[in-house]
Length: 397
Image 1 (tube, one colour):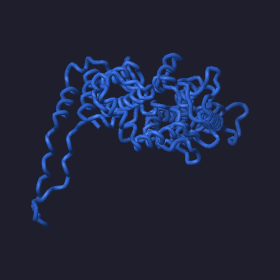
Image 2 (cartoon, helix red, strand yellow):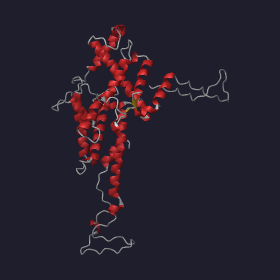
Image 3 (tube, helix red, strand yellow):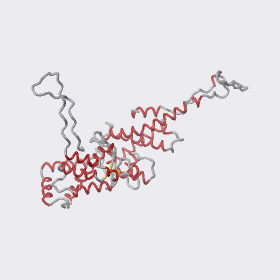
Image 4 (cartoon, helix red, strand yellow):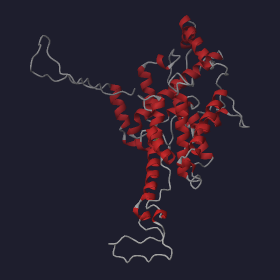
């Protein structure tokens, strides 16, 4: 985690040997901030930092983001490769002071709002950790010494990889990569070197979409051939199950199934949220073995876009859906309230007189007055609320 001050204990301390004394003693003061912490605070508060390239998870106003824009990835890679100099084959082997210097270089290159600080550090650390492991592992597979590692350090890394413990760990990781569910093949995708978050963003830009892509659409994009057939059996089964479930929801009285509003942006957004919600529901269902690692199958690094460091991936995705669903539910409820408002029901049905006491003469009756039993109800209900209510209840709104 980023460097921070150690919180003071909330429990008062007593001198040794004093038991049951009524005198209260203050907690010891927190230790002074370290040099690295003071340095980081100074870098973050530098006035000129506002002029640096902007980072934002939603890429507003042309901002960049970690895991989406290649130039950010290239800077992260160039930073650690330009200041490596050690026999470290993974992030965990790198000394803390070296990691801190890389992080401080990142702070001096990009600017982000305070609210995204923890998330920026989390994404930066994840990207750095993955690239270190991947780059050095690729060099080892090609039996080629990296230019940023000295010959002596490279020999040390190779020796560490030759131990029985390292070999057993490598074998276990290889088995996990090639593992597959019973009667299914190994997971494959067609994203190539591009991250899923980058592909999702490009889909929005290239197709002129008004909002993010749905999870099933992203899985189709990354797991299908050019002719639309799936590369991966699990991805195909998952997408088809989710899409069929949402199709049935829309046909079963959902307000999204109204043909008069199917073309509106609000309906497209609501349908996307339904698809995303059902996707997560299927993934984490005990009836399926889609994941056992706490990650969401088929979404790549997109699932970590707005994830907080202390959050699980499913919890983060559900939180994002809930936040985006609130305006949709509020708009739907406001629309229903307009249908039920007195302005729509104050006028009496044709052939009936207005109630007395409103300062108006009664309307003359028609030649053939209506039977009271044939009169229309005062409140005209035109919207089915049950599906929306069920959806809001499931989302906890």
